[in-house]
Image 1 (cartoon, rainbow, N blue to C red):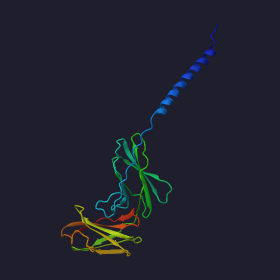
Image 2: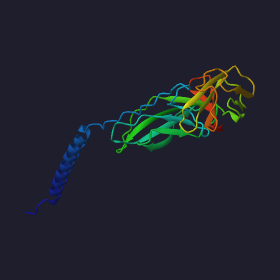
Image 3: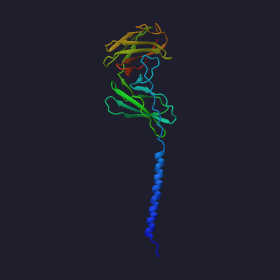
Length: 243
């Protein structure tokens, strides 16, 4: 009697499918039981200090060009390899990816901005396995045009002047410091000034650390714009003053 090859072939096919089904099922169960990757903590943003602080920290304008500076604390998780930065302008609906930096970096300057537009930022950490954290706290800042035309007169009690081409701000801070040590010599607040050109005399408010400037010494000074919001402003370039 000849063997029934058709029946034998069907049985072999059924056995193969059963083995395949069992193998796939076990493999699938193993994947579903694997724990979810542990997400890293989001970056911790450095808080903004008052503009009058001896050491300024946090989101702010910068004297070197037109940009918005912000910083964050170093990540504690050794798995973190990158920091991703996202930005949204006030006139935009959604946050957009802006940049990715190394986990060794702790600050960033955004130069691709326009003055008098608020910009919002948040950050995420990313591990070497591409696991993303939740978003950080959102921070924001609005940059104003810089004061320009800084000049000063000669003498131990010079006059300082500058001009401002935009609408008059709430006021200005004039910073004068030792050029080598960055020690603050004078911080003056100038308010209720509506002229395009502003001029003040050294220590007009009596708050300077020195009654007069020292001869044959190098100083530097700049002018900061006081914005209506704590998270707004501008900083002029530094100007050298040598007695």
